[in-house]
Image (tube, rainbow, N blue to C red; front, side, top):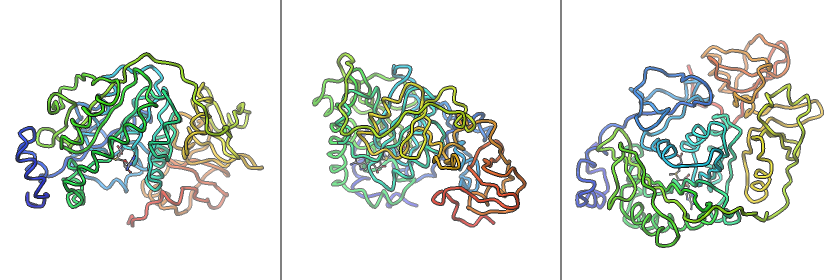
Amino acid sequence: MTETNLPEAFVKRVSNDPFLGTALLDALNAEQPISIRMNSLKGEPVLTNLEAIPWSKNGFYLAERPSFTLDPHFHGGRYYPQEAGSQFIDSILRNIELPLHPIILDLCAAPGGKSTLIADYLNGRGLLIANEVIQARSKILKENLTKWGTKNTLVSNNDPSDFEALKNLFDCILIDAPCSGEGMFRKDLGARNEWSEESVNMCAARQKRIVMDVWDSLKPGGFLIYSTCTFNEQENEENASWILQQVDAQIVSLQIPSAKKGRNGIGHYALPSELKTEGFFFVVIQKNGEERIQKNKSKKKSTLTRIKPESWVSEWTSITDSEFIQWNNYLFAIPVGQSELFEQLHSNLRIIKMGTELGEISRKGLIPHEALALDHSLLSSEIPDISLTKDQALHYLKGETFHLEGTQGFNTVSFEGTKLGWIKHLGNRFNNLYPKEWRIRMRID
Ligand SMILES: C[S@@+](CC[C@H](N)C(=O)[O-])C[C@H]1O[C@@H](n2cnc3c(N)ncnc32)[C@H](O)[C@@H]1O
């Protein structure tokens, strides 16, 4: 591949920009590094002896791209393939002073790379609201966070303007904004074709609108992490300066030496010409003012019911640090002390994942939901589990059934300690309860 594949106007821009320089063009035509981030909530790393990413606690480079689809650990949420530059979010979160139990909004969250990172950072504390405006993408976000397996997450499918109803609620908002994607030119060749001067202008205007839509829902003293995967000044430094002209806020100085300071000292970059990453820009802006307690009015009354865990709930879960809520016939585990917050969010937003769903309450008892199997810390250790070989695990993940010894009734199935989902064992055969939309579609033999 040659440099000429890059949009001509982009090449001209970069060549004339001393901040970037032509080394960037060469880097965009070189091979891309492959990296992942381990899920520290599910125990020890399943892949070992890897080169660590210096700015990300659980991030590692892989020597080559494996077939993630053919690794059951990937389906069980033990790691997430994530570009190394995006993993600077880990350094940012460790650089800013958040409360012990922060409420964090990841506004443009699908497919969920940064949401899973935030969930890991939280390690069960506080709450993450991961939002995605595009419905089809919000389902992928839900799938990825369900597999990550933590009950202090909630997924919504809302337009940024819907958050106006939630004043002064969030300690931190990540806006990983839709952008012109110049930093993805190596990974995603389609991004090269979609790029134009007009798209840069259009993206910059849309980013401003998105920030303003959610600004009031950030607490005074709270942090806005604004990021893009593009290199141009309009969508990055200029937008950061524009935000400071609109609102009472200041840029937070971060101690992240691996990243290059942005133009005029605003924000930071991961540049593929300098680091083993794709392109990434980030800046942190802190809202000025004292924290105020704000009672938000709900659009409508919450339809959630708080329930006391009855003995049958404890058969399925370790209930020590959970509360339980019911919506219609569905039961959810949420972190202790967050019922009111969940009610408030549920009545203002279109929630598609609420804590960890335990399952549906039927006349015969609970029909367990996949989220329960995948939440390692919530699932009761008393639930029977069948350990599968790799071959069996892949056939299970394809939705197939085969001969398997096991206890009659609901069992989880796992691969090398990674839970994959549920089966219902009927004695001589089993029903595969792995969700249809998650199934592996490729041939596995
Ligand atoms: C850069 S991607 C997010 C990547 C994600 N944070 C991750 O780490 O996996 C930007 C997201 O913004 C969403 N988006 C597009 N238009 C939007 C808008 N007008 N308001 C909010 N989000 C939008 C896109 O669908 C996309 O999922």
